[in-house]
View 1 (cartoon, rainbow, N blue to C red):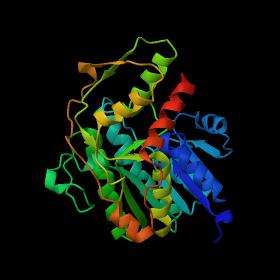
View 2 (view 1 turned 90 degrees about the vertical axis):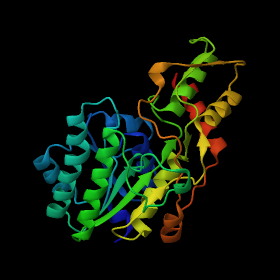
View 3 (view 1 turned 45 degrees about the vertical axis):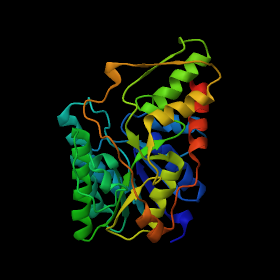
Length: 318
C-alpha cells in the first residue's frame, strides 16, 4: 500500500506531540485523521496550517470509538491521547488512560485488525532509579510513584498483552519532551513563558521555580514525532522503545540556558513551594540504542535550538 492511500489516525492530535506528528505524516503524503476530546482540535490545527479531518471523540465511549474505527479504517494508529495532570481525579485518570486504551485495543481488534498501533508511554513509568541503572534500558523495572505513572505503566502492559495475542502493537516510552507549542504546565515552558512576559514588561524580573536539582533526559518534540513514525514503520512488532536524547541535564542547566537567551538582565530566580513536585525522581536518563538499532532513529535537533525555539514560541504567544 502506498503512503498516499494509507490512513494514519492520531488520538490526541491537537496536543503538543500530536500536532507535530500530524505535520510529519501529512508531509509524507499520508491521509491524517485525528481524534480530539475537546472539539476544538480542528480549529487549532487549521491555525497551524494543517487541513486534516478531526473527529470529536471520547475514549471512554467504547461503542462510539468502535464505530469511528470502522468508519475510518486506519492502517496506522498513534495513541497519544492521555490525561497528564497529576491533580486530575484518580478515577478520571484511569477511565481515560487505562480504559480508553482498552476500548481502543478492542475497537481495532474488531473493526481494523490489520492496523498497526503505537502506544505513547512515558519515562514516568520507570520512576526512581539508582545511579548505576542510568542510562535506562527498556528492561528496567517499573517503579511508578504517581497515579499518572501507574496508568501509563498499565497501558504499556496492556499493549504488551495485545501484542502477544497477535495485534500489531509497538510501545514507545518518551522521556522529558521539550520544544515550541509546549504548555506552560511543564517546567521548561513555564520558565520560557515567564521570561517572555518579563521581556514584554507584563511581569517583574523574577522567575518562580520548583526543584532545579533534578536531572532529566530532554528530547525535542520534533524528534519525538520522528521516533514514533520510525518505531511503528521500521521497528519490530511487539517491541518497546525508549525515545530520549541519552544525555542527562539538570533543570538548573535548562533554566540557566533560557536565562542566558533572555533580553532582560538580571532576572531573579525565586523558589516557591507550590511549584515543588510532591513526588520527584532525582535523576533519570534513557538509552535509545534499541530504536537506533531497529529503526535507525537518533535525535537530530540540538539542545540549544530546542530552547531557543521554545523561548521564541512563548515570545510570540504572550
